[in-house]
Length: 121
Image (cartoon, rainbow, N blue to C red):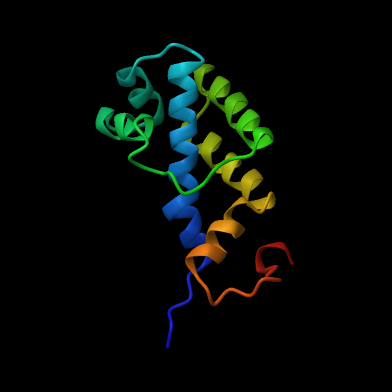
């Protein structure tokens, strides 16, 4: 029997890393922070930030322009010293509602029906 992947697993394996990658990229490219400062803000190692910036991690999810703008605004919240856990949690809720993870979920688990709406019932 094939193991079914839960939407929550997709969030943990793909969405959260993609959010972190986009936040790191935004903080460096748009706000001029160095990797050390970004690692402090996001609560991760400099090596992890480097891997995000060099596209060695979290490359499965491509955010829409609208989603990227939401993440950019969230990066600004981090610069205002907002809690990183809250910011990433809020982004997960928003992006879950946009069906971003559905595409990845269906591509990773072929047992998911095309008309699946489990997350939106």
